[in-house]
Length: 69
Ligand SMILES: [Zn+2]
Image 1 (tube, protein in one colour):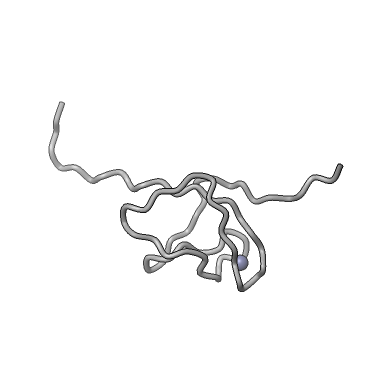
Image 2 (tube, rainbow, N blue to C red):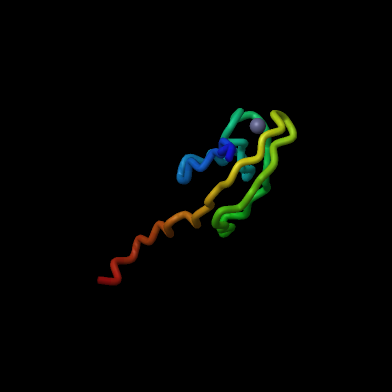
């Protein structure tokens, strides 16, 4: 049984100008993101290199100036 090579590099996504860049080639826009966009194990397809990648998108931690402790 062949094992398909998948790019499961979670936490290594690059976001540029509100776009998630392709983790494979780093040049193709694969998904438009909002500031509060989150996704888990989301398949994205890059038209530039033709590769599909699985990405995890975590919401950025809120930069809270308040100390609620
Ligand atoms: Zn690509």
